[in-house]
Image (cartoon, rainbow, N blue to C red; front, side):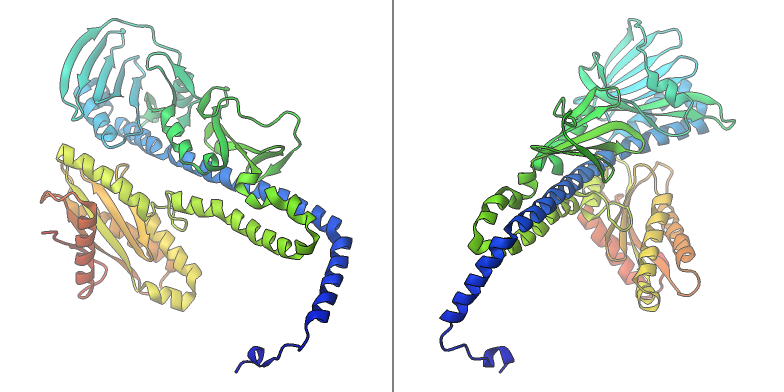
Length: 503
């Protein structure tokens, strides 16, 4: 029998209990003011931390929504830099732009403005596209395309029109990276849009064109509806030019409220907690989040009332501390559920990999394009953790992720499925070979892994893969077949990419 069970209760606990109650009431009466002040200060600090956590999580989601556009503009600019003759060939330009827009539902349009004054633009117009070319003399030709990029309504030559002022084109022309524009209202499409632009340069470093990807404000409006910020209050995104991009118009820091620096921006305490910060380092947009402290931290609302009940203050203080810790972790839990990337490696997490992988496979199925699905696994990974600790193990996982990401293309999807297992969905060009593409990723991952761990451990990367040549486009089936091929092959030889079958 344990000591706790062996202790006998006093025969008459009433005097002891009464004395404890009297002593507790005296202590409570003397310390109530101090406790209320201390807890109030802690509650205000907790409200600020909860609000900045919600705002930072929302900014991460907004910044993540811009990555497909940046990858697309870099790809088009790189293709033009390698072969500038595409600028004078509308058919090749349409093929290149259509290949990138298919499956990228967030991209509204891609524009290529050549230095000679000619332009080409592929604009998404449900249920298809509009392809527009403008010659250097202003002559415009417009073609309506269906969702497979086949012409349905060739409109021919259109009236010449004055070119609008586009300051972001000039800024991108002299920049070495991707330049994001402030939001602007475009009467031609009746929407607010932003542009990601980059100069295409030839081998001599001369700018031959500027490539721009347009995103509609609706992309960011939809994202805000499901973001942590709007679960507890209001949010808005505004450009540095003052034009709203998404969210509640006119939201900002109160003029009469005291402000302080918190996390990556400024916070103001008032009837609500307002937090303002840049969306990202390369994005000229400002995110403002106004959160009701009583919503993000429910315990604060009842704090004053509970503190007045002297007989239960000790219980209430204990409960308040527990609720504060619980409330501070709720936003973090939501962020982890909604986050699009794996925290350790920066790759897509399993959920995001499945969503984007299915998008790519559906687009490939419509176009009849071959896609390869590969699974990668670290050989002898346990020896790293056992021999050098989990810190080097984490470095090894990050190295493999970096190698896979470096060898993948802009339309490929690479993710970490869990543990030391990774997967990739590879969009193959007409002249690409599935085995070669998978081996390229496996070799890259193997090399970065060896650099990370050195020669202390005999490690490597094995892979299994299948492609869609047999007409199978279901991601779970393809991943399972690739994994089966890898596991079967590793029983014989590790460090090899094995072809599987989903028949």
